Length: 269
Image (tube, rainbow, N blue to C red):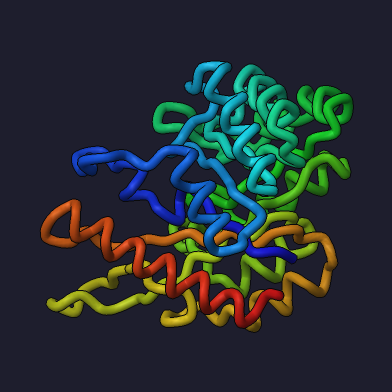
């Protein structure tokens, strides 16, 4: 397993609705951060949609990644045949071994049966391109449903991108998610967190934190994922709360990323 970074390692820098930084991060910035830290895997998520980049920019991205000896990983949102097929083409172009997909969009939430049907239609294209499709656990579907989808399809071209925090939105903890989905996990999103009771005591708040400083037992997590021998990369993601200004927020985000990378390097060699 190798360390990777992502556009979601620096979400504020890439721009969040209502919080636009003076200078948005681009693919060049992210690749240079990776190179500086001797990280060889960079994932582009749906907060930097590659299908919106002009062809010449995609080619420039590919060339810079090759110069820096960095492997690109492609991510997208919205499980439709058209969208995934578009991203298969992009993955081939950028030599990405997979397309990471978040099933839902704001106005699109397919049923379990619809998900199985869509993926079944996509498999021939994945086989031809030699690109895998990784489904990310993301709020709505519980882990046992995602497992059932994978088992039903029963294809080596389909796997899981396991996110350590997203399933809290489905009422599930990391132990349950890992137990069910680790055997299928090809990419791991490491996102550390803390859960604290709100001031009036009626409810809880989930906050992101620097990797290794929260509730996530990362050594245990890596050991459990490694048991199955399928996971290629552990990708750092961060949820940092906004500071007083966007400039301070971005500064904090960079500090968090640096400290998180340093910590992960003590666990993953």
